[in-house]
Amino acid sequence: MSDESYRLMGQLYHLGFKKYRLIKTTNDYFDLVMGVPCTSPTQSDIFQYDFYSKNALSDFKERLISQDEFIRNLEKYVGDMNSTDKIEFNSVLANIVSSVTDYSECGSRSSNFDSNSFKSYETNELLRLKSYYSAKKDNFNLAYNVFLLIYLSVYKRLPVNFFFGTTYEKDLNEFNVEVTCKYGVTSKPGIRAIISLAERNDQNGANIFALYEYADMLYYGTKNGPGKNINAAFKTYKLISNTNDNSPCHPLAQWTLAYIFYNYHQPRTELENCDTIPEIEQLDRLDQLKEAIRYAKYAYDLVNNPAAANILGKICMISDKEVPGIESLKVEAGLKEAKKYFQDAADQEYVYAYANLANIYLEEIFDDPSNQIQHLDDYLLTLKKQADQYEPWAANKLGLFYLNGEVESRKTGNKLLFIEPPYDYRDRTRSFLFFSQATSHFNDMNSGWAYANMIINFPKKYIGDEGLTTLKQHLEKLKSIGNAGAIQYVNKNFFDTYNPYESIESCKSLLSIIQL
Image (cartoon, rainbow, N blue to C red; front, top):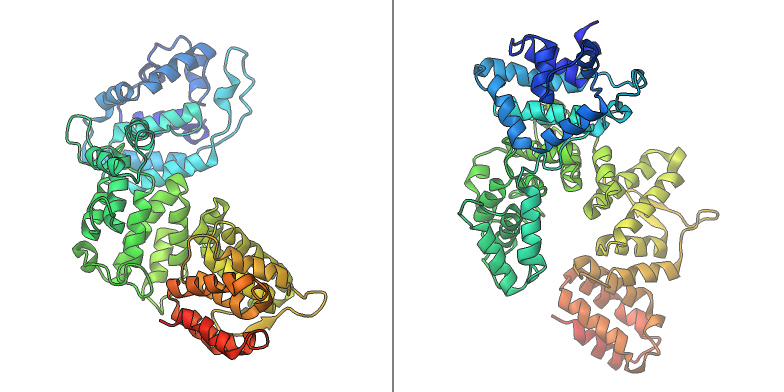
């Protein structure tokens, strides 16, 4: 029987421990892993298929829970290997999880064996572990990497603290007790508690959740805490974005660094005019994107982080014409199509992925006429999901579409109207509801357009209101948002819209509200 026919535990022995002469026999290997002597040839044989007796499996799981002790024992065998052999052994681990056979025909060999131990591996877990090994070609703890494969062979999934480090759960509980449940994260005492945990320098070390919150304070700036300092934020994010084995890592820190590398000094982004970050400044655009891919792919491959998926999708949209060499870089990194990343992120209800996915559906309306209505429906449904998360951009887009029945290609500027039966999408009631939704929470520049669209296109919603109170309120809201384009739109069309209902003097008085 070939070595490759075994499952994880058997391949680890034949392609790893046996090949590098770390252990002589399968009985010795069984003793090392299980912690008890092998009692029969059948036991050591079936063990190589990740199949365990009921008693042995129960004891084995207890040993794996004592993770540090288990890893120290493995270190006795692999710790003295030279660096070249360690790198090769780590590559062997990646190859094993890439090619392992996952079948269950041996599942009924004996009633003395636990059939659950032979269940299928979780496919995503195999992919996560492969990505983890591949990312650690020259910087890893081999004993820990071997432990991960053994753990997967038993539980068919990876340990909870994988990727996040062994302190993840402890730090999360501590943060909840000392900050969230005691003060809240935005109060003055809560901010002080966060900084205290982040800067702690005793044997417990800094709390990774406090460090991430502290980094966010430095990134955005806080009224009751530290001021905005993107360099300090960048360095703090890096402290908890380690790719070293089993080191502390916050699940969002990897994505945040990818975001910074992607947006650094780019037009029409919040980092367009940010302070210089020397580490990023010295990189050309292609190398900045390479770093963005590295951090985002790590977070996406290992924990399916939706924000990381969204960044990867945006990078996939970049062409060689925009950034020479990006196409080769995408191939080298093994990136998929942009739509796949946006869909993965949208499936997890990541709000910004909806906009990117909707824009792909929008272009498909123009590029694939034979399925035009399906693409249009996908476009509208995706925008609605984003609007339902109080995103004004999406709600305003929907309001405009149901008002005019028109879509416009972002690539070409071409327009299509859907105003003829049976595909007349115009619906003024729905249009007004979406404009209202765009102004209900988190007002931004798109909310300004929504106010302008309601004021100009739905005058009867305001006329008749005593003292025109709602109209005045909306004009004041529009002014406070400060969207110059939306204000200009209202100035241009206000008299034609309201003169049939109000005197010229009244119209002038109302318009004076929005004059800057």
